[in-house]
Length: 421
Image 1 (cartoon, rainbow, N blue to C red):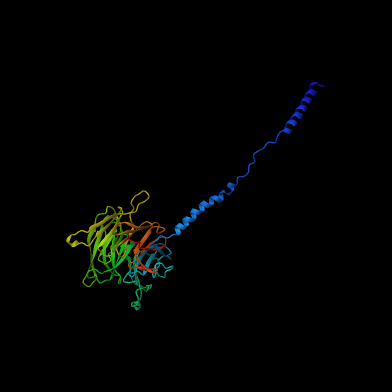
Image 2 (spheres, rainbow, N blue to C red):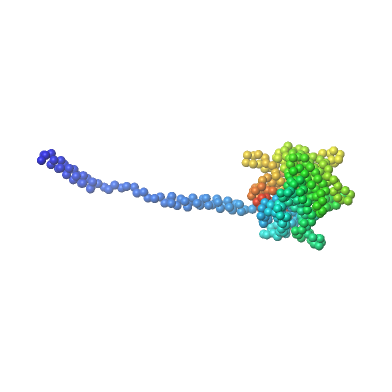
């Protein structure tokens, strides 16, 4: 036996005994325990709360009405392309791309619901404009089909002529004209009771095409009583003065042409003569409107300005129309660039000018050009039509001057007139 082996075994045994005694007497080591933090578990709930509050407030914000927003006329199945108040202001006709003209009874502008009458156009027709003729029972509708534009006048039958004018019209065609304006679409149509000079107080309706022509129609008979050509590449719109004396067109250029309707001794329209031009804008005129007294024209241009013109001049003595006032358009984009107005309409008293750009609606003081109020996002999309009621409309216990707007969002909105300072 090797003498070294007992020595090694003894050494290993002593080492094991020493190690056992050392580790057995040592204090147990404390190790950190990983306890799940409760905060991350509840974090998703905490994060939802701050997100839910703004969402709720945004929804409430959208539900809030503008102070001047009186009501919304519902029931349209497509884009509203034209609106017009009856002469007494108690009826509002709307032309809709669903092929239906609706006539709303406005007994109270704040009512929760409105009665309305439907006029279905001939199959395939899409109404683009509408205008009342002699009274609330006579409506002229411009309709467009693949074959061109047509005009229809709807009215009640002769047996009901002695009934009150507030009666809604019956869906009976009194006259119709087809393929007018060389098959081009009628973009605007305005009517006025001819009361100037020897005029017989018949309603004259001016239809303006997307081309360059404007046609005047006798509202009751449908007979064409005049035709003019702007010769300006493309029309934006045309209007007739409230007294039936002048027509003016906003077209592709910066100049506005004005024609006079000459009436014969028997009161009928005899001819239409170009009598003046409004020169001063630096860019195309997008829209215009006559003042209630028919002596001034307000124009909006893409040059960023509004101009008020005096057209009550002796043009036959070569006296030119005069610019009375120039206002910068008080509307800018996020970069500070001045925007232009798409539509204009003056209140019946001539004191408040309503103007639109896209879906924004503004009310201006016609005397100073100062902004009275603004409704951003007045509609969900661009405003297509704008018109003041010719007379105040009952609203609750008050009589209010009402503005109507319409767009492709299928809505027609009624707005109150803001107070002047």
